Picture 1 (spheres, rainbow, N blue to C red):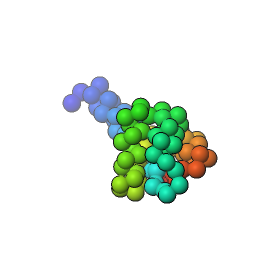
Picture 2 (picture 1 turned 90 degrees about the horizontal axis):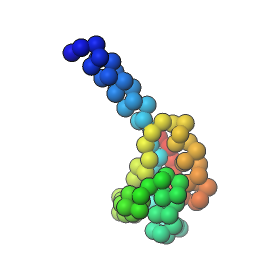
Picture 3 (picture 1 turned 180 degrees about the horizontal axis):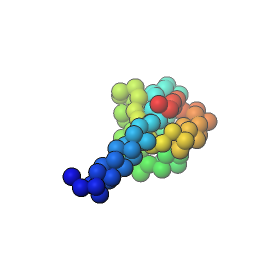
Picture 4 (picture 1 turned 60 degrees about the horizontal axis):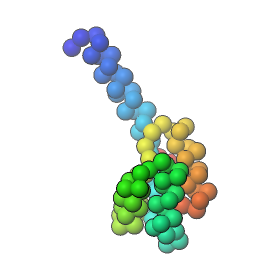
Length: 91
């Protein structure tokens, strides 16, 4: 393994470790499917398909990781979801 490959490998590992945080969305009996889908599209910048899949997972599994990334970036996104009345937490 050359120096260039080793440096790239180290950068790849650091990038993976930096994005280990995730927003977990929990199921509730208050918000409709449509509202959750619209919220994920507007706040998390999901595509319609991503938002629909996450919403179904939340409904049937009870929770779903809806966004991963760096803590500082996710903090404001999680807060926006909570302001909309969604049950979200940052891990």
